[in-house]
Length: 79
Image (cartoon, rainbow, N blue to C red; front, side, top):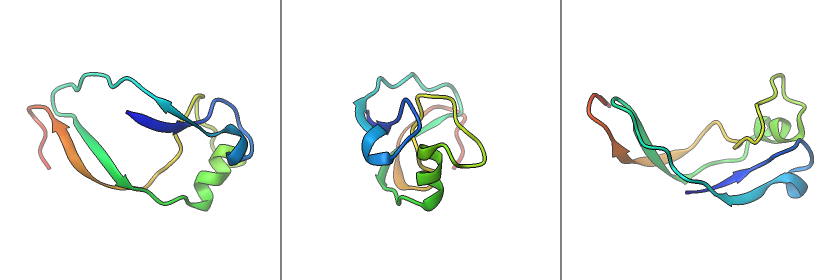
């Protein structure tokens, strides 16, 4: 899977990197989504810059909204 991640806080153009990540296996009741589109919100920019109310554990993938489709699911998942 490809993801934009940051390993330190700062200006998005300077700290965001496109990285290839290995997917972990799904557990029962879990679902994996393929994100087709995602906006960049002011909250995302604040998160990357480290000025949001809560700082994530690094490295982090920004984004709190998206549109996608179910790519994979395990037994016990109910949409």
